[in-house]
Length: 79
Image 1: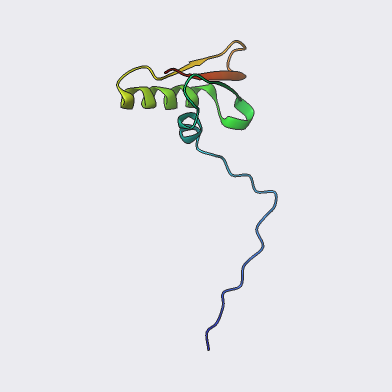
Image 2: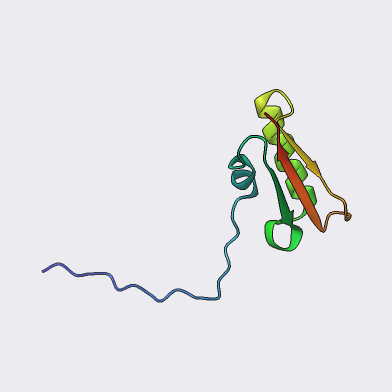
């Protein structure tokens, strides 16, 4: 007789963070996306991710800017 493993109920209040690097890589070319630091992560993390992606591409593919001292920041995917 085969036994089945019972599923434990998952916590509905558990928040998992999405990878910022994957989010930036999924931006279509020529599009600007604005992120809120309270949801997506700090601007320092985003700058680091943009820097790593640009270094891997060998040129400036992504550009990050902020008009309100990092509370929100915009990532632009250049063509």
